Image (cartoon, rainbow, N blue to C red):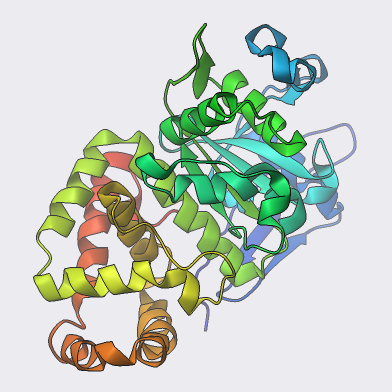
Length: 362
């Protein structure tokens, strides 16, 4: 059964021909049809439709003036100007036409200065974020960054999201520990500076605003869309204050039983997913907890929520946490409607403050 359908026709006049294409997006796959021209022109067509006047002379920007001494070589390297695009365009973009082999960079049309990096593989993505993953999950009093080799064999997120404050804190901590960024981290730093997410002062890095999120082509396509939606929800939470206030207010109204469910789910999420080195989220960080509840609820299609929570994760919780059996059984008997109630309230806030009808990103 067709779960989601989008039809768009783009007609491009050239000396040779016109063409139209239609995108049909199914629950588990998508196909792109065109009437004679090769699919390699699709991204080009979208760029024209969006009136993105990107010319060859302005594809790259330099930010050497903002670099520190320890990373001056990395900072003088060219950083791509983000392509302004909506989430669906980013999701469908063809890696064959990226400006660099390992990743492409986009500026999301929703939210405030949300940068999306789409990577070709988990390995390429890990180069940017593997230490930041663990740093961002620590309490402020615990902040410490280990040498790169320390993280060998430890899980790195399959998709990522970091706001301006987290990025500034990470690079300040590296400087405090007299450590240079790893090569991928140096590129990330240059991006954060070039895209005006953070700035360099005489003393340290300061947050400006915005966020960087990422996902990978290596992820299976259905889960890939889920990751992009999940990370975009985080980006909106970071960059749209009125939305963030609404999400906090909604979660404050949860019952003690509902709040305890999320406490267990998030505290043990890494274990539930069997992620080496990541047992779960830092549940002492209230903003992180609220943000994760929001993203986990909104990442799935409404018709998939039962499968995600009741078929996959709650059975895993019974197995991992036998001491919580009585609580989980009580939750199922009294609070199983919580997920749909939250989704309805979050969707209203997303439509009101971000213009996303019914809270749907794409």
